[in-house]
Image (cartoon, rainbow, N blue to C red; front, side, top):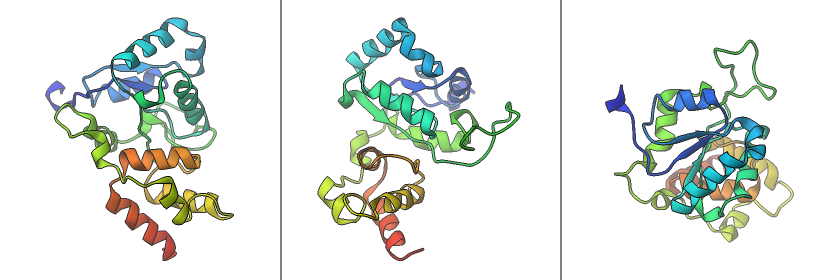
Length: 201
């Protein structure tokens, strides 16, 4: 029902029409379907995205597989980085109901993610929420290095463990993971995940 939907301060970019249909069950604000890789040949849609980003920030919510990250990074190269809010769904094994078999990497896309999980990822961006960056862990690059998540032989594995603990995609680069943590993860949750990894749990 419309009264149960949330209204976001920013438009949301999703990969395809089924993601848009799914998200429209949860939010009543602007959703832009990219149409997968075809968006990069669609000058009108790219211009629309640039116009939106000139006025306000844009939330990117693509699937948490390699294709989704590729699309996300291409978009990041076309608009100002400070206008991008990256939101990630966790990498959940499964298959969408409308499909005969799972995706190539076996993860659920945005369209297959539970409504309440999507709501929890986006609720912080409603008009009555606080500034989104106030929720972030504020981990510096130096601290990330000291904690073992960058710059060492085992950093790649450590980041995968950290991403898994925080329900973020495990194939993110060091820079992208740190950015996501500082945008989306509370400080106490980062500390909890870090200690859990060190304890070998």
